[in-house]
Length: 115
Length: 114
Image 1 (cartoon, rainbow over the protein chains, first blue to last red):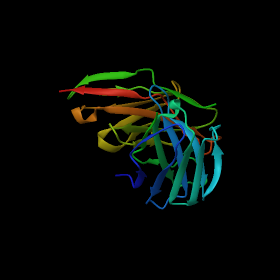
Image 2 (image 1 turned 180 degrees about the vertical axis):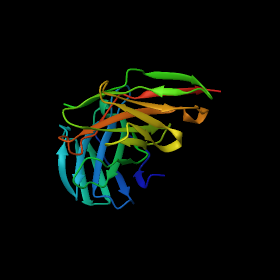
Image 3 (image 1 turned 90 degrees about the horizontal axis):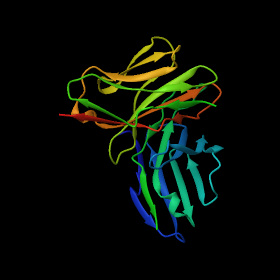
């Protein structure tokens, strides 16, 4: 396994629910990411955190709210989602220094279904 | 803006035959190129990367990739395919201006038949 865990692995929620996705990395990395993977589409980068600070928000709707309390944990809080938000949500981490040469390590993902 | 293209949705190959999964890229600076594999119900696993140096990069599970600057390509190859190689393969690129922004292709499904 890659050292990045995600819970839950599957989630079904109604459009009015509030839920959270959790990611934990055991690799000592200093950067964490949320991606959305939908069928027939490229992976979409949603958020980037460096040293717990959010450095990128890729025009993600406000119904997705990330939280990074420390460099090992990352959350994605969900509320009032739409059916089109159903997808596989992937967390990743990497060790970022001064150059973009470091690969990202991915968790297994949370399969989200919005009903 | 940087981008990658994977022109084949699916590649079919018989076990024991060589395989190639194609990727072309477009970046404004020097490219940093990656290949990932995704097995069913799993996250993406890193296979290999090209940063600089030798154009032939060797990676995990016997895979290799050839960087070709003139053709802006980074094709993934393996001399002898295994049924267990059947999975979804993603090419990705970062450039020097796109700090931490890893752009993925749409993926190519590899199906290796016994």
